[in-house]
Length: 148
Picture 1 (cartoon, rainbow, N blue to C red):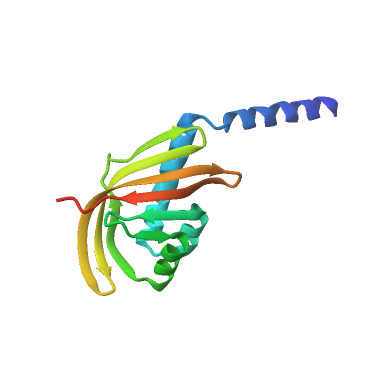
Picture 2: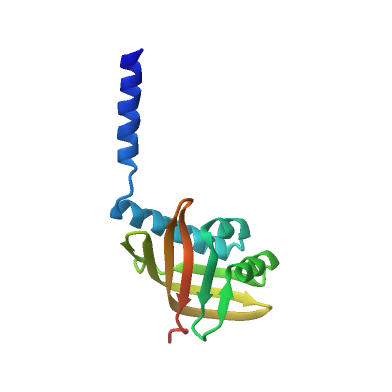
């Protein structure tokens, strides 16, 4: 019995070590999470957005307007924006990690309608994630003005 317990303990220790936070694992996790968040925005999936967004999250738009977490979630629930395209340009995503903070930058192509008015634009964004006891959460975002 002792040998079995020792073997299980050794095995569980190696599993924990294998999943320990490393800069590479953190970059991969944040990249995956941000891609999941962009898809949730595209689909007005407020439940997924709520799971990823930090309670104190804010987004600063290129024109200086600020959207809070609550405002973003309500816009998704109300389907104020219908996206045909809401995708990062392939190969533009970069994730930088420093301790418990990660910053994602990418070029985003969006097209759809907002309150019935059509739009299409290209922009750069930066999304800042922080590590919490519940995992990585999207804490702060900033979107550029529309690119020419």
